[in-house]
Image 1 (cartoon, one colour):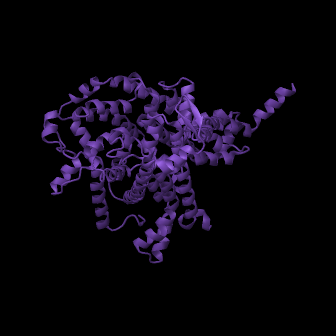
Image 2 (spheres, rainbow over the protein chains, first blue to last red):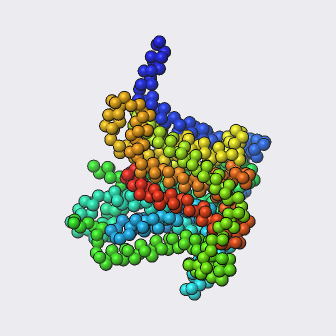
Image 3 (tube, rainbow over the protein chains, first blue to last red):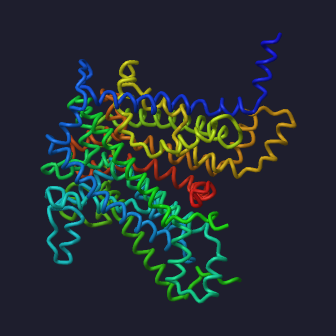
Length: 302
Length: 282
């Protein structure tokens, strides 16, 4: 039969199978990413509480920008958090990776120790750190007391709560980002360093002229995902402070979550989500633009 | 032996060793402290909270925390969700990665880059409509929203990692199997997957931890306590019995331990998986 022959011929083509294999992702993408993205843009133009829906145009956005001090507060503190936690995190994980890239005894054990904190589930880690930061009998202040310092109230103090979150974020710098740096370092051929040494390069110059440029693609990857991740801080804030004191740790994602799933202001929450998306998209595009100046791909010069 | 730059001066190496020792100690102290507090009596915690080795170690906090809330149910729920989602992730991510790694088809590169771009998409921008979908389907307070999506691609990062790994397997092996009459499914199942143990182990670790940790998902989708996962249960425990530090830390350990055990079992593959997948050379 002509039909079955043509079907058989069709299914014998590799391209048919290739497409078939990626279909699960494609369905997931359309159903759970592309569709919902557009839908949330549409919802953001409405007043919606799961029961009634009313078109309000750009009202949600207008109100957020002009009449919502909490929106500005949460945005500002989230940006501040990102400005500190991302560079410190990258510097920290690169330092650890460079130490672990040296030839000394016990590297696998050290690597495991540095990695362990990032394996601690977010809720467990939040509970643990809430206790570390406890003003009276938390480990941090008891430790500071040994050296004669009186520690601040940390999570109960408006001015110290956000720094406490930055500090806590540094506990995870031995995790995935560090491993990615380490893999990058181990991928740098020894011959580059040999050539640099023959030219009389000092260790610092070797780092500056060989390691950093060759590591820049990895750095770029970590930077982009680091910024995006820091803007989505949620669980720690939800568990440790619930956004307090006086909304000092009302992270953007927490404010969004509350509007969506506690106040059921789904239109406003969708507007918040789209603003977040546009901010992150803009930051990412700027990063890609700037990357041409500092990210070096090994294949480029060939 | 050939001397390389990493060999360095003996004094420098000694310094590196000391820095690593102190640094890694600082990183695991909070964990050791969790363990030690879980093993202390309440009196000892009150008297000497910073002491790392308990004077009179006791296991009584564990059964007490365990029975204060239905942690057995929480663990069962979490194990179910985690296993189903992890299995679904491996199955679908490896199929999709195989499709991207080995076949030419119309629009392949566009789809691949679209997939990479979704890694940068904040989850919040799809969260509300996805919630509405599950609500319409009556799947709120079930495990479906937490498991079913894993079967649809298994996450861009996982697909990417597996695809990079698959690309490093020589194509000649595929062609030899094709000549022997194998189907594409056969090649995926009997050649690609067995040769990709490090990458698959890496995905298992990532996916297991991601699902075991997941807090926001269960928080949004699960309402009745009998459906709670450990992360939600732990939060509930903290709310209710948060002042009992020994029990709280014992419960916290129950949440932490499985991920650490899994990592230790898989770590030999894990590091290799990340390295070979070319994450470093992107």
